[in-house]
Amino acid sequence: MARLLSIRQRRLLIVGVFILGASFFAHGTYMQAKAWLAQALIERAWQQSLERQGADVAPWYYADTHVVAKLAVPKLDIERYVLAGSSGRNLAFAPAHDLASSPLGEQGGSVIAAHNDTHFAFLRHVKVGDEVVLTLRDGHTERYRITAKQVVHESDTDLAMSDGLHLVTCYPFNSPVAGTDLRLLVSASRLMSSSSISTTTA
Image (cartoon, rainbow, N blue to C red; front, side, top):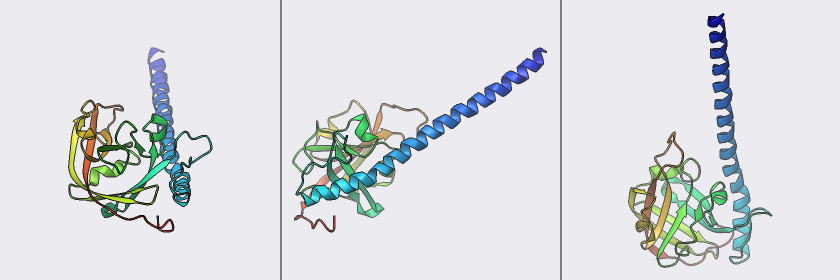
């Protein structure tokens, strides 16, 4: 009888683990889908912002943020839209500009953060020397060259405050543990500032 109960318990344990794993998978799939589906709404808000000469345009009616830039890495054929304010809610939908850093496109250190399993997963593939293009919502573009790619502790904020554009995400990639205290910091220096672009080609 004891052996029979043990077998039943093992079966219940297996079923329980399966259900738990399935729920985690479903939650992860939902988060991924939400992150990418939101990009369509964010892209529409970006186009509207360009058409209105840089006006604040919320991507959906209850959003407490707006699109501030488009980030591109031409070598990898990557484009990402950037939201204002790096809150946890915004990071669930897109890369976000840390408002405690310098305004995008201006002097000082500007920080853009995103999750490493969605919008900044591509950072593992960038290399020193790659070009990064930042288009601002008034249509102007700023070009940068990646000068450093390093792993830092989350408390090390000095590097991210230095002049240039800094892209930050959690490290390592594909970590089984959430909330590590390490960050991948990709730093880039400004190359040049170009004239405004046409809203039809943004």
